[in-house]
Image 1 (cartoon, rainbow, N blue to C red):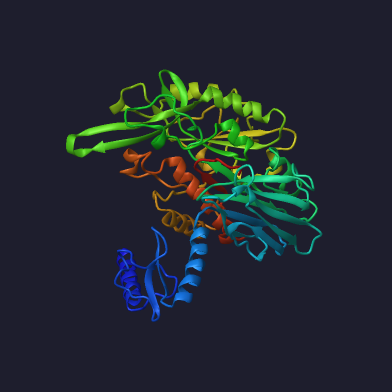
Image 2: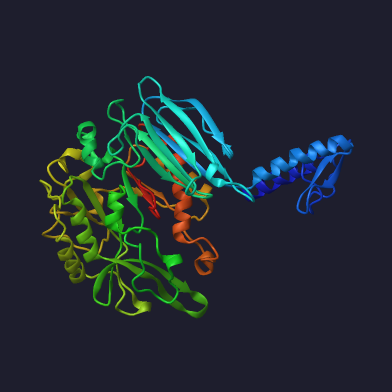
Length: 502
């Protein structure tokens, strides 16, 4: 694949150097110095930074200089991406659009049903530019309904994108209200509007009890066909004890603790329990072998304590009726020596289970071997929340507690195969292909980028795990809806660095 790419690039370059640079093209740089300007034009300096092909006629030169200066000014800006997700059966139609002092405000004319679209937005910056004047509006009509909304860009008080519910209301967002979407320079922010009924749309900034609100529509839907937002290495929002090679940059995966991830929409949690100084915590460790010197070592760190997770889950669910799934895996006892880290033994598992029994509303099934994915959503929630704890480790015996809040991995049994790549395109292609290959199965979409050597040692000079997560998350909102259909879709989407609401 790399060879093909290289050959394609060579052919493209060959065709490029045989041409002449058009008017206003940049010239005189090291890589294109040998390429002449078009006939009637010369390579001339416009200022101390830029040289461009301009007319060799005096009048033409003045006009070209003025035009090019305007284009150069437009380059001074701060850009980012807006993803608009249409999860409705109706088309979003752009009725009007205007902007002032924005370098880019190219919102799509239409966004089809059950699809997404991305737009590049760039605020103007630079010397003598009053960024507070930057602004833009794009008014969308929801075809076939009386509903409409407006996307706005604002520069006053800091750059931001926002949605105004001009002719629309959703839970938590009354008609006429403004929802701030935020702004990510060189990143992405998202606006989601979904629902099959024009009178019951749900959008970004949904209430914390979004599953309860979904019950009238999806109560009879089996869990295996219900999409749950998930987080990767969920307990690693802080570093509370670590090995010599571990830093926040190469160990932390989340920006919020489990309690706050629940508030932001996550319902499936990847918990990796470890024992550290006699205490149970979340952990993120990797076994490293250095054959040249015969070294076996575990490197990583500890995060949120299990006690804090239990308290946070109970605090969240005390006034709600939501389904919460905890998946336990990658267990370690780190008190036995760095080169001898091992999985938990049964006594250690039992002590952990006792702590987890402190979670309220543990789900009790009619049969201990119940296949959880066959049960409808309404079997779990309605009057109160339900918490399901899935134990992935084969070293744990669930005798006496199976079906009483605790279940084996095969009772949920998602297909889960991550890409093990730090390249965004490779990860996206891999996960989408696996989603198609395993259509109809309960699938966990591992939408995560894996930090690789040397980045593990170079960060923060290289991107951190959470920065890689932000990059992957932006692509999720831009790609997943367009790639899904009634047969091929993820059951859970595992995210790193859940900074935004899910």
